Image (cartoon, rainbow over all chains, first blue to last red; front, side, top):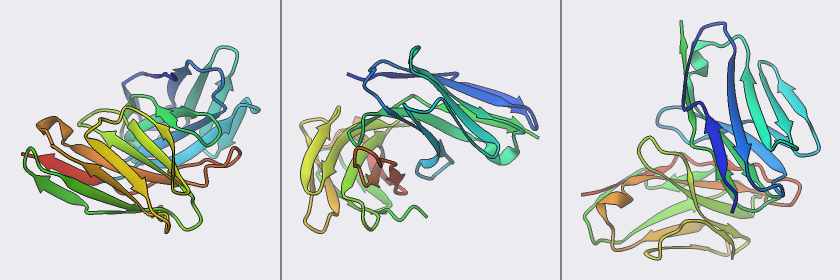
Length: 111
Length: 114
């Protein structure tokens, strides 16, 4: 079955620096790759996603890249702010079927 | 606010007991997913329902079962509870077509088994 590996498990950056989180997936049939942000005591919130027919997508300070050949995708956060501190999850799914999540990255942004 | 509601917010019960967690999806969403999140762990996919039918199954224990009703709300039943079942249980909903499958998560139910 599908397996999603996520690195690093913890990331600490200075405010204003960039943060990069990387994920790899195993099932080449996966075609949808969302990223979620989970703040303490809340449910995960979708922040950006990318589909297999696209190599890169950007939304303000957040960007995601996808390399289908290598089966890996990454989340890039630029100009980090303290409110970006949270746990980030990557995921992979196949068109409306079950979604498999990575183990999560705990991001700390130091002011 | 994602539009997905879950009740109860907190649940404390004893080992061996049975509980039911409830989820109402966003208006228009046909699919409901259940996830378990243990302390400092990732999200473990349990089961997915689509328009009342089971669509996909993950690592769901035999002691756990779920269903989706005609009004599309879903219930997750956990029986013969063990200490290790203590976790956050999230429900998510989506349109779940082959083109549109963004999931929106509810606030979760925190289950504590003592």
